[in-house]
Image (cartoon, rainbow, N blue to C red):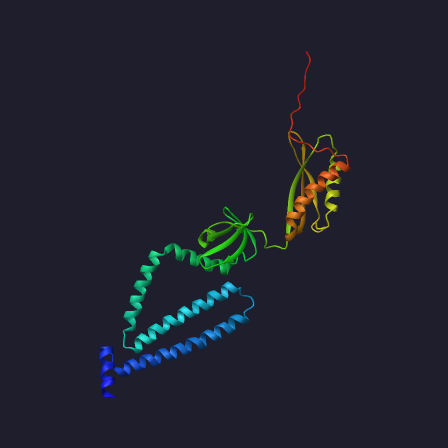
Length: 270
């Protein structure tokens, strides 16, 4: 037994045997404590219904990293290692790593900002810079967006936090803005009636807010009418295209001639 103890001491160098045992016991206690704290945090997060899944995942990972960092310092102290020196060493290493991966860290903190500020969520249709599409997932370093032609695009989070983001899915209602051109020969009231008839044909267009139809401008080849109607967000594009078709039909039914770009030439006889 004595010889075995001597062998262990020779392997651990300057570390006393009781110090090694103390360090191992401290590590076991810390490991058990980590599991207990993590279980408590997971239970608390499961009850936090207002937090999105990515935010919960971020909190869970941050707590795990913090617990293991504290464990390393505590166990190092139990083994007789100067904790102050260890913290200083870790700080230097952390600074060196941060300088070498600045872009990665920028995307990481941008990801945290996106998860906290919530300018969009998974499933939203957004426009950010030159990227337009449906958000498929929000990660810590990048966000995946499916474009309108269903191309999966990975966008660095720092690009999103630095761009103006338009979220077309955030509000339940959306306004459809359109313009239609009619001939100068058509009376204003006849044109407005034809457009309102087209609006009335689509049950997805809301009565409140009320549809807006007014003469907007006198163009070179036509009179322009501005149309603004409201619908549910999910119906936006169907309403947009159907209203285009319905206006053409109602113009014809009400005898309103549609116009197009043309030039009138007047011949003057001398």
